Length: 349
Image (tube, rainbow, N blue to C red; front, side, top):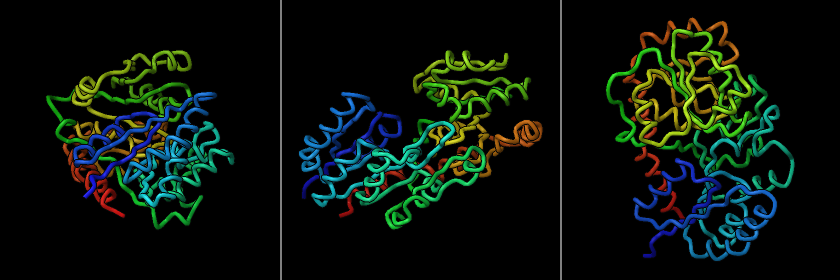
């Protein structure tokens, strides 16, 4: 029997992409990676030409095609997979299921060639996985908060039979508590490449909470110092760290008492889940996958109500413990569960 060979395409080799590649390899499958970095101009044209022509040979050698996110990079590979009768999976992470006009963000924002490609990608796929159900059905709270339109089904209801909710999975043996927590500490983590990303990830709300809780120490991890210092007044109780490696991030999760995720658009936030595995008590805006992750183990607060609810939130956080967040992650979001789903897809015809 021929050993399965997966052609896995992506734009950026993020941690969740890397984990899926490693999982497929550990399951005994051969993985051919195809990275299509999001270039503009001639780089964009070169990527599409390679996908169109070289992609034929790459897909012909593969038994299955997997695309992390649906965008330009997926189209030709999914088209060749369909014409050759090979199973094809599109994994929807967030950007590819939303339109946020005020941030000019989301693959569904403009009725242009890009959106046409994305629409065809979903039609060509054999299976579509969303990391959170809100990316299929939509998130009404995000719409009410910021006018964010979301969900594949309101846009293409005919996709329902091929959509599955398959959350990302996490290594509980690596992300684990160690040592005492530093009381009254709040952490958030992200890649803040520009002001719009910082806004989308809820940094203005994080800074507002810091002003409302002057007796707490807040930390932002990510390449944010220049962006935030230029556009916001940083409270004295906020420390901004640069990018850190995985070991340093683990140590921060283990030391901080709370983790805050005030994003206005998300899929299923990886750093939130990893922080919860390390015993951080979660605080979050109730949109997309944030309440899915938190459940009843932390506190949800609509960012529109922060001024009026900050004191109540602090009082309700006080009795919460660090064990339930980890227990929820271990029960619902394990690497083993996702590996089983990947294996089932590869065994599909």
